[in-house]
Length: 346
Image (cartoon, rainbow, N blue to C red; front, top):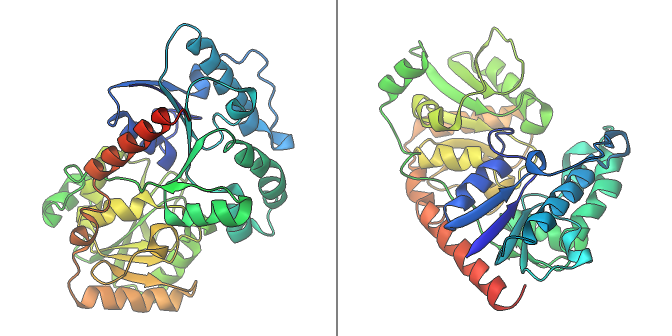
């Protein structure tokens, strides 16, 4: 099966969750052509950011590039990430199509963007193209949370195929050796935070917990330009080195205010690291027994108490997620969905 995989950016350009998903999806199919904005022909190159139409413009450019390639290459299936192929369903194509929704812009706007400049554009402009992206395609949600949002906000029906984690790469390593390899010189209990240093990711909650727990050394892995005397900050860590960081810590603190899934939580649990997390993403549908604590509030005191609980007894989250989020299950499910889409003609 020859697959055209449409995505805004490659993993070399942007090391985010959608781009990591694209790399994982390559493993499911033997013949994949990845088409990104950087590989698309886009002669105009007008920046429409001020009108909140830049992502839509890039999606249109990616779609045009696919059409050019499809004139000389026979594709069996198109898989598009989010709005990267939003206009294909309206202009028509003979190739069956799947659209994978990694989150919803309207859900993001309602839950974390109220009161910001991005609220109205995300809810009422960009979300239009999110709805259009579903037209003429089999729609897939990366989590039950995303499926619920697609239905409640857009009345889009979707099939849930949960993400996968490479359990051979993400596995528990010796703590002392891992700390040595990343240059972490401390005998304290280590709490790990992974993500941007902003309120959406709950960085403000981390800072409050840090003040309440001076006995814990917090290690922050981030892409943000951050200098903080109370934190050990490691910037732009490659994904392949993250098992060392998860294995160096005693718990993951992940108080994000909005996640569709949260690769960070899955990778940490695959490394058998207990989690102290907010109830968002996959943690809306996971039982906390065996994995750590899922905190239903945004109060730093509740997270500090959860840290105490996690440190007081053993947890083995790898056991809880090993089958559900394995790469083997992920590959199997996407192959089955692809065969179904091709068999039904899209």
